[in-house]
Amino acid sequence: RIVFLNGSFLPIEEAKVPFMDRGFMFGDGVYEGVGVLEGRLVDNDAHLERLERSLREVRIPNPYTRAEWTHLEEELVRRNGVTEGFVYFQVTRGVAERDFMFPENAVPTVAMFTQVKAILDAPAARTGIAVVTVPDLRWKRRDIKSLNLLAQVLAKQAAREAGAQEAWMVEDGFVTEGGSSSGFIITREGRVVVRPLSNAILPGITRKALLALSKDAGIELEERLFTVDEAYDAAEAFLTSASMFVVPIVSIDGRAIGNGKPGPITKKLRDIYIRMATAPRMA
Ligand code: PMP
Image (cartoon, rainbow, N blue to C red):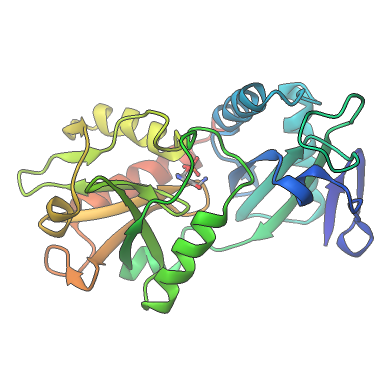
């Protein structure tokens, strides 16, 4: 398995990050994850745009241009022979003696790896998944894709221990988002509902693409807050993420959603998204 670290492609066993890296010490960095389908990056430009924004917000210099990032991602996908899966990359503020303030001459650490993973044929997509709700314990800048993921680690572990595959985080009675996904419900009137963008959630790239595609397909959508009770009562629910696309949710906190099976509108949205991701012009 080949990874990329600070300018070199090398076997993962040889990829070593210094002890005092601020990613390790402080979680002082940001990351991205891009889906790979048919060996190609899905919606990569939008992910790089979000990376640029995350870096700007935490004031880490961006080490590469968009073209350079794309080249590195494509090269790593090629070297690992990934046809379906995921590219992960992160940038930390670099290596320096432990001190909270920015170091003066630190060089950002860049790490990238790929994962082979079934997206189109994932069992979760066929059967749907169970979700549990947990309090949203995160900080107030969730719009930044930061390496500080302790709240999500705890949320998703709680989900696993409850026999579920994702946690929906809740604040003031309203669902914010999934531990590593955007959360949607479909009302009994057939409206697709998703929380509007703000500092309270990550601006999901799959979410954004799906909003545009559903509009084109004439499916009504609403960006507004929704409560846990409204989610329990929904006709359908689903999540979106770069590595899962659109995945049906068939229960929340043990309550069946709809008839407890993946719903028709969710399936349609998944198909629409897959069609976009496999279209010849997607790079
Ligand atoms: N919200 C959170 C908290 C996430 O970690 C992710 C996964 N990156 C998402 C939403 C989905 O975003 P995307 O569609 O860009 O993968």
